[in-house]
Image (cartoon, rainbow, N blue to C red; front, side, top):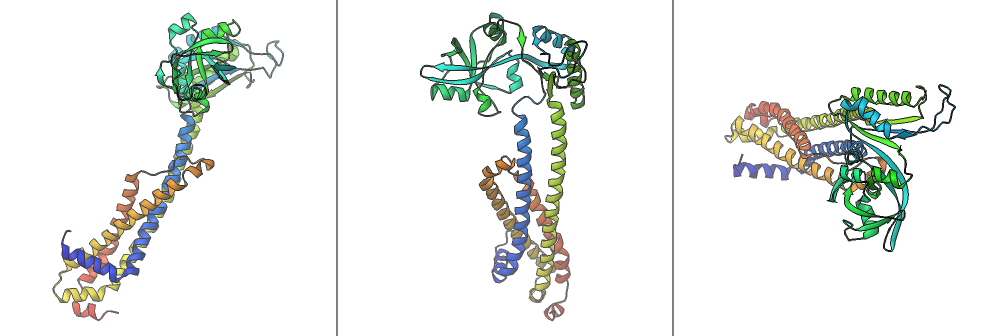
Length: 409
């Protein structure tokens, strides 16, 4: 493999047959380039799906109330369904074994002021478990705890972008801000995978918001994460049971789809999982087809190369080269050209993906890329294909008698 004389012969052969070497290298490089682009775009589409679900916990269920659209049990159309604290206890009592976390929620838009800076933001009254629902990560301080809930503390946790809006480069932790004319203490700052808009929310204890904004026991919405041990189908059934139970409790028609709304991520997960499996199969088929085209191309070129070099091989045999040496030389040259060309194709493909990646977001392709092991595996496949394709004609040519090889057209 590291015979210096053999490497000299290989480079001489490549330099004397530039067109032949270029064609064989181009076939490999183009196949790897297409392979890289296809898998990169496919991964970009999968990243888009994953990013959408990263905004909240993957096992989330949200339940909210609305106006009825059907008369039921003597109640008229247009009746306002209002969740209350006893609905919170009702859900925990009846479905506790299927729930991982649960939090009621109240949301209001309000003006937030810090010194000379102010703006309008959404404030949410929640329980500590809501941090799991939003996948929020505390970057300074802490999130709301149950002591805050019990004491109805005037504390808030704000998003990273809200901190930037009002405090600039300064830390907001432990500072005081005025929200709706009331002074609150900032006990934490969070980041959220949902992006800038989700990082402009304000979280405060649910009980504090109930007392200060209405002094009632009203609830706008419930956020739930179902038990991870539930399968997707079981989680969908759980969501349906939860909705029917709340409909029955509030005398809502089972056919009224609007009075009580429910968004179950399990249903979305099932649809997206099916789409991702289908997308993966499609990408695999197209990528495999591209790879097969490359294999056929390199195989044809190897057959042509060996046939073209029949006379040369005859001369080498005449001066003492053994069949084994001749075959090894052809194989080594094929591996060298295929490996270099495959690497160049990989670099070009990755470069194109990095260059056009940002502009593909408008087509719902996020961070397109391909793992190196996948492309290396594809390149090795082409190398093996080239070796197999070249070995048989090379061995046949190496076994031809010198006088026959020299007289070949």
